[in-house]
Amino acid sequence: MYYKIENEFLTCEIDDMGAQLHSLKLKENGKEYIWQGNPDIWYGQAPVLFPIIGQVIDDKFRYNGVEYTMPKHGLARKLLFSVKECAGAKAVFSLESDENTLKSYPFEFELLVAFELCGKSLVNTMTVINKTKGGMYFSIGAHPGFNCNIGDVIEFELPETLETERIDSDNLIIPEKFPVIENSREIQITKDIFSKDALILSGIKSKKLRIKGENEIEFTFGDCPFLGIWAKPGAPYVCLEPWYGVNDGREVKNDISEKRGIQHLNDGESFAFSWTAEII
Figure (cartoon, rainbow, N blue to C red):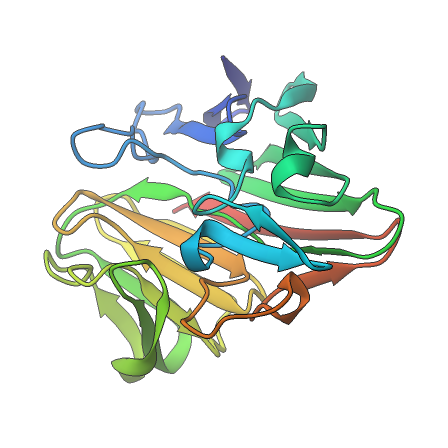
């Protein structure tokens, strides 16, 4: 079911299945800024990635000597969230651990996904609350797809020198890195830029970037350790993905606590991050 929020400038719709952003429109002209999930290209729109990012080896991880099965990008995107609040310009969705999640992920948690319209901006805040008696390991990330065109430019706030990591046919990180830009602010979206899957970037100095084209958006991603940029090759959208975690490589880990990029919360602690999309 879709839930709607709005303010003077924008309307926004969110699907309670996965707490997935479905629509962001400018009221003055009805222009849609979110990819509408054409199943012939990519059925998704803005999945919430929790409690892992990308792929773990053979869809398995271990914790305290027990093996668990975890699908690509985690559990949250395929689960129904409850609606804690939906009024005016703000909506908050909640997912809590239960007997089914505990079969795949041995931690008790609450995941809050909040959407709020402020002027011509959408702020999406994700909060992980540890309800386990003890520590909790997790990753979390966003995956919003924005309408754009081939030839549009992604412009970083600051000049960057960046390499991308890449994944193999099993969605696992390979050791080699590949140059993307050198002392430049711009990455152009071409029909082939994602022919080897996502750009997986780290060490970014900028806190925000812009999609420059017909639909101009300023995207603030803050201090995330990884930023994924992805689309199906040649498709008219781009996903901007702040990640607190990353795909496995080929090196087998004995415990999820050893996983690269993994986050940790002590008993009763919480973790939150936000991204913002401002229509320019």
